[in-house]
Length: 160
Length: 160
DNA sequence: CGATGATGGTTGAGAGTTCAACTTTCCGCC
DNA sequence: GGCGGAAAGTTGAACTCTCAACCATCATCG
Image 1 (spheres, helix red, strand yellow):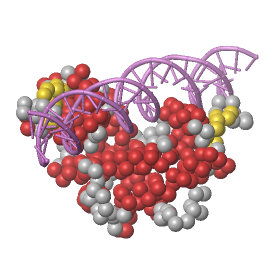
Image 2 (cartoon, each protein chain N blue to C red):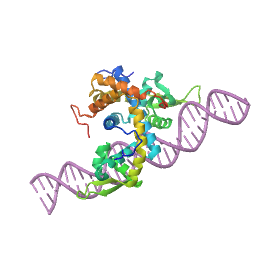
Image 3 (cartoon, chains in turn purple, blue, yellow, green):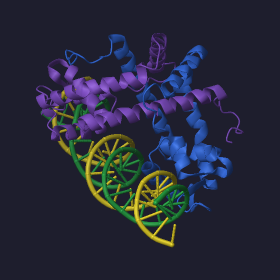
Image 4 (cartoon, helix red, strand yellow):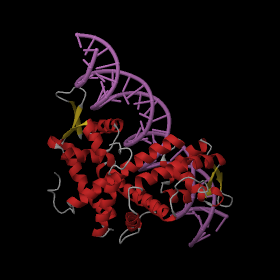
């Protein structure tokens, strides 16, 4: 037992329970998602998100910075990932027209095809694990809850 | 736009919104947790969980299988992780007395110390990101929701 | 007793991520 | 114009994770 140490706001038993179950639910979800995407599209979820964001962008292209913010990656991680996706022929990189620092990533037709083929299975997976077990009310509550978490509170901003 | 493809149960706009925000909230949480643990204890969250599970086990030891199930790792991942932790001097491995196949991992005193030092900051981080932004009612709802997700539904079991 | 399969665990290679260092380009200001 | 700092990206090394192959031990059953 660790919680004999005072002056720490330890979790109550109920909170502990929620936290542990939250971790478990998350693991279930990620394991299933990664397995499905790896099987059906040969890429991890982070890469799928990159393609998905690009596919929705005007002209199917975004700067690396925009992309990094949208998928929540560090610049480094994104750069490596895009290198990989480029190598697979799913994304192309080019220099920005007017700003020489920024590079623009664009989705290729091949990339779009791969995405389109993986999407139905992916959505089905998300649905069956996350949404199907929940009632409509619970889904609404979940929406409120996650919104509360991502909304900046008091102190520091959520480093977006 | 991808959703012109029919015969897929696409997410509604509301569901899409919940899903995206869920992903964002998760990223926030994991980024913060990993940063804090890396800074304060020099290990990723998965490793922290291993130490935490061991610390709560009778005699502070568990078999690799038990440990793997509790932290939700593949045997391989756990084996690599424990190797690393052993190398750091925080965990020791030994052969099981009666079953020659199983190996038992036990938390060392050093391991316990590291854990004890990292725990307060970790709990504080979980609290400030996950629990503090939520009302007590929301926490309870969240508990119900994650329980519903981890509970086996209809078809296949959640591969625990 | 000995083959057969199941259980428990490890290993190595390849893929992904992190972290810090670095380059290049742009902006503001003297 | 040129200097200093900020912004945008990239790179390489160290680390973690995944996946498949593998070894050893146990259990069972003919």
